[in-house]
Image (cartoon, rainbow, N blue to C red; front, top):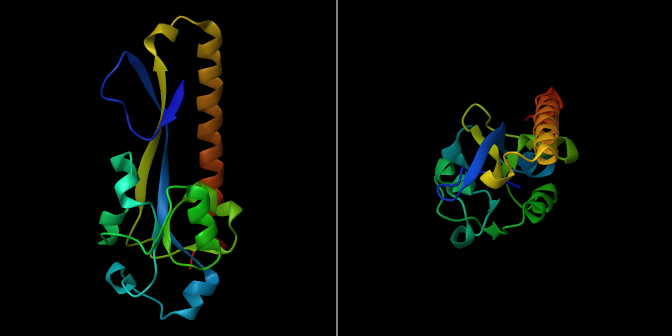
Length: 164
């Protein structure tokens, strides 16, 4: 059993969409206040960016640079935890999962009317598990719990203090 961000294209697998989730451009309040406030995506070119190591992105769903019109970021890590900490310290701006924002109160979504991404989580299982009652029950609880928690956390990110 695995959770992925895209549906596998090969193998004897059962795939179930867990939930869609949203991502937005975010920056620390301190970084945003120290720069001239960009009004559109093209105005962001002078600000440092944080993101994935482009050559190490293993899934096209994780490539967020194209919507920003960028070829690379100034600060790169394939660890979302490292990226979040860089953003929280004001090192740059980057794409953030809305469900992570309640845990990073110093970050704010920016230019939400210009950039909003939606991706999906998928539960991936072997077809051999189809008749295993325990695994089916576990999968049901897992999917239900993840859907609820993503919805709850994204609602918190929508509150007025979550945006600049």
